[in-house]
Image (cartoon, rainbow, N blue to C red; front, side, top):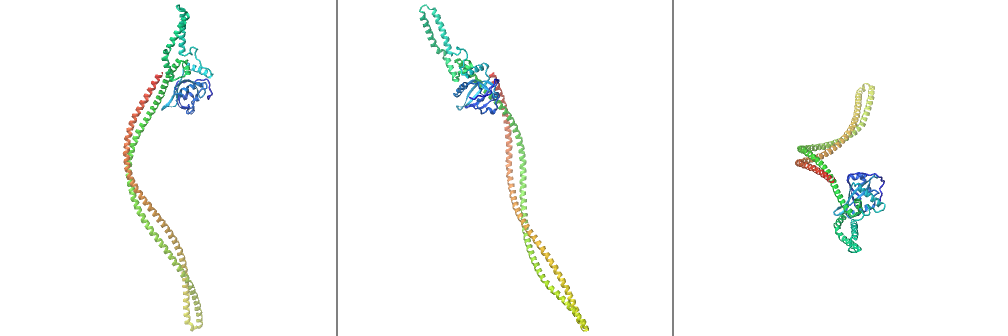
Length: 525
């Protein structure tokens, strides 16, 4: 057996009943605060731990053997137990242990312990010391250790002997020896014949007592005798312990009921406050729902207007898309026209380039003509009067050659300017073509965007229509919710009234539990 150490000779005094329950293996399943406070252990050191954690090493195994023998047979057990605190101090308890049954099945044990009186503690200490030393416990002298029948028999026989002795000296009619033997035998026969009748009721009471508890060891401890009287006295004590246990459990239960009733009263009061607050809040919600219904109608109107505006925007988007397509076609035509202009300018450039050699030839001819005219003028001068007419013609030819040369130079200059202009025109045309191409791409993107916008606007239109429909339906639901909230408000007021009644009942229950506790305390005192 495990020996719990350390221990020291310091007694813990207590006044409250210590209550604990265990399963069939002695594992603690519950306990009251007094049990924990006296033992000094923490909750986690007691709950679901073996009950022998509080066993004191001074307790002999025989005491627990008697206990388990009675408990396992379904009987109650009462005994003196020396327990150990966590710090090693000790405290004596007058323990009353009862089996716990559920549907006729033994499921555990419950122990209620009270503070024992000093004489009982002294007898228990004496008996347990003898058991620990391996001796048979003895209390009182040899006569006190006789059974009740033994004492009566001894007393009766003593009386008979005294009677026979007196008779022996008083008898004169018969021989003394015969008179003595006859008197003794007659008295003994009479005594043994009447003995069963004398003890019949005692035997019945003793059998009844033993059916409840048959523990000579505890009879010796509690009464100082282990005979029939001790067994009957032990039975009386166990009945008192049973009554004490019932009262203790009733007291503990009434305290719990009182506490629960008080908590119920507090909870019901809070519920009443909450229900009144809920009633006020549901009233506010009902008002808000009415306002929300009006808002829902406005939302429905707004959604309908949004659908109309979305249709108008959709129409504008479609027109914009058509204009974009027309602009794209125009830009494409412009691009083609630019191509044609470039082609024409290229042809013109080719033509001007073809004119340039001709102009060169004409310029050369003009120069040669001018030289020939100059030579002709010289020759005409030499000819004198005969060459004067030729000189006039040569002068005219020379003048014509000069004008031709000037015109040729002007044409060459114009052709050069025309070439420069054509180069600039081609460059500008190329830039315009690039711009037109970029514009065409932008228009294409615009068309795509407008197409996408048209789709989104259609979705928006559909969504607005759905919203309008849903809002109309929600309006009906809101109205129904408003009616339900009004009903909830009415029900909340009814529940608040019922809660107030329950609070009053809980208050009455708490008072009755308090009265019951007082009655139990008066009964136990």
